[in-house]
Image (cartoon, rainbow, N blue to C red; front, side, top):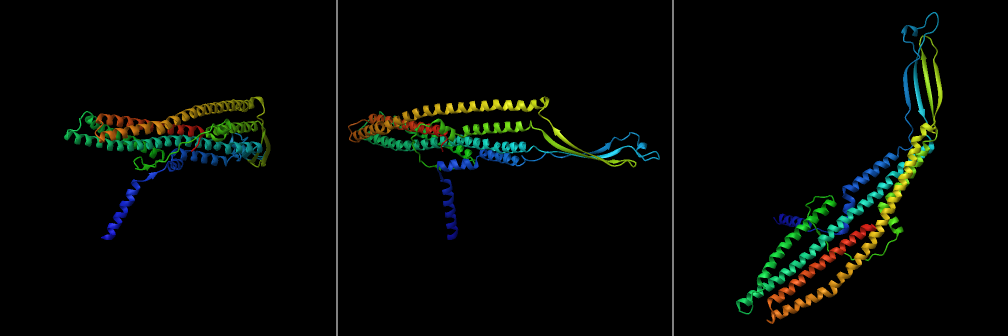
Length: 414
């Protein structure tokens, strides 16, 4: 019986620990990288291209044919007669074109490079997914802090209500702010319900990003960092932004594709062998012929030359796209740096001046009320002002954290 109780208690501890699991932001980001379907999709595409590149140096398939060759319609002429041999032959034919070695090399380089762009695009997509996860994480974190403020405020309101009830019974006070305090308790309960629903929404979002059951219960740690950012130059974006590097890879692929198209303008050689079995004593014969394709002729080279010119303009387009992203990134960085510094100054004012002053004001009103020299409505007004300011501070902090998310996304930092 004792063993059963121990096992039952141990299982309960495991279940409780599982339900109370606390997850860090880094573990969420790692889970997204490992499990998100978009990452697996890119891995499969990259593997597909790499596997396809293994056949880059293959030859064209041989061509084999068989059938009657220069054979009369009249079968009686196939047979040998006293006048001579029969007419007609049965032929077996084989043909093989030899690959251009330069074309094979160019094709191999082109196909091996194709997956490089997808590798960078995968990292750019991961950067976007990380930004979504960070937003949900920080929104959840701020809601947790607001819930703690609500809990503290509920405790203070209960103190005010109980004190007012006691004073009223002893004819030492009025009920001028009593019912306002009671109403605020109801508002706190309503806000708590809304915030708990918001937490559930963020939990579903993070579970979705981690590609697991949407109803998995977990909590998040309260760790966060207020970062300091330095201005990044163009070289930083060229080296760090995966979407820009993906464009560079596409430009390289375009050049390799041009090289491949140029090799198709070179002659291609082949050989053809035919063997004929004669009818009616007609001797066996063969033919052995060398073949050459001449795509350099004007009427056959137009397609390749057009493709080369088209790829030139594609490279121009990709370069302009790269400049557009660079321009947007540098502009967004400058704007975000200014906004972050402004938000930091606002938060600093809340932390060092506004909230401490309002806390002292509330403490003064509370002391006056406890000494029967202050009124309940004065204490309630001081509490309400402090509460609103604390919520405003948390909104400002959330704004700063979300700005950091945007800056990390621009700089492609984890």
